[in-house]
Image (tube, rainbow over all chains, first blue to last red; front, side):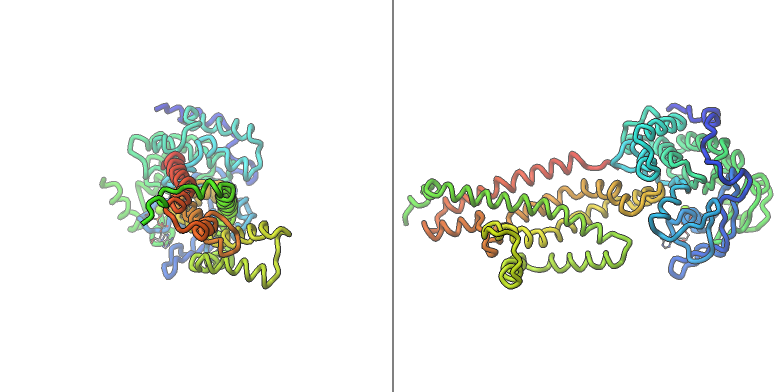
Length: 268
Length: 229
Ligand SMILES: Nc1ncnc2c1ncn2[C@@H]1O[C@H](COP(=O)(O)OP(=O)(O)OP(=O)(O)O)[C@@H](O)[C@H]1O
Ligand SMILES: [Mg+2]
């Protein structure tokens, strides 16, 4: 396994996030966001602001609404109330325009979801060619650079099923990055991986964070949170229970709920 | 009992050009119907999985009507209803007209089955594939065309093969629409020479020449093109 995907490689490329909102200004703003699945109130009046260049880790018990939060930010799930702004623009209802805006929000899934019938290179170039209308040769050149950066350039011509989980997830990150998104969402990107592959993916993500990418990461990887995140959001029962710095959260959580949760994940 | 008749292949010699013509008529009808049904069946399945409720409803209604109506009724309707009553005519030549009306009714019927075979294929594509396609900004139509359908087609090859074989055999029904193909010719020869075994076997073999390779080819392709997950 080549682990050329570490930080130093990644910090070279300064073109990860397009310059619109200045660093430190609000990039993703959720106001009074409510979401129901039938009777179930899954997101309860969520207010959350993520600034440009910020890395936010979302943590909390199963069923707390973390995935739903991520998915509603790029409208894979429609919301029932409130507003979500990405770089000042409100996401429209389903349609062509939404599709285009959605490309500004990169998404990395727990189960990778690489297109099974396409090679790794085709996976990465599909969006740029079809959505961003980049010429094929140019898209391939950029894709190869991205694959180089996540350390799997040698796998470009293979199909997803031929790669290890860690390699697939790094390819999925490259696919999302190829759209030059303003913000990247990660929904438990390492929890489907064998332990020995977790590091290679977290290294790529740490590198991205160091590059100044705005990231929202659902993860229970405390090492990553402490190393890369500026903010930890603790979610339970559809609410944001606590919002603080990683150090503060892991050593000195304010709420009983968070301390209880931490004691459970720390005990094994 | 006249055992000679059992081995009398002479009617084929006497009517070879008619037999070949009838066989060709079957091939022509099956190929055209196959191609058109694949196209229209894809349109139908796109409607059935589309985010627009009206389209979904229309697709479902269509499939339920045509899948549950006997082919004979549909063909009698296209030939008598469309042609004789409404005076719809697609070609000046009588036999060309019969051909296109048969293709029309036969495609209307077969498309419903193609649609369902493809829909079963779509169901084998994990939901995450569609979500990933949407997440990189592909609109619905492109997600379907570039990500979902290519995988669904590969998963549908075997059921599409069965649909194809059923379609070729069903083509024998179109004689009710006045289009003479192999079954019509066989009937004609039974009338002229008596219903003999060689005539039956000859025509049965002719259909197997079409259906067996269709089955072998599709099961080969189904294995060959399967999407590995
Ligand atoms: N498509 C859906 N339909 C109905 N209920 C859903 C759906 N998706 C999620 N839920 C419910 O919404 C609640 C929040 O789910 P969500 O997946 O957002 O939680 P989570 O915090 O990501 O949990 P986990 O840590 O297990 O991934 C859960 O009770 C879940 O059962
Ligand atoms: Mg989740």
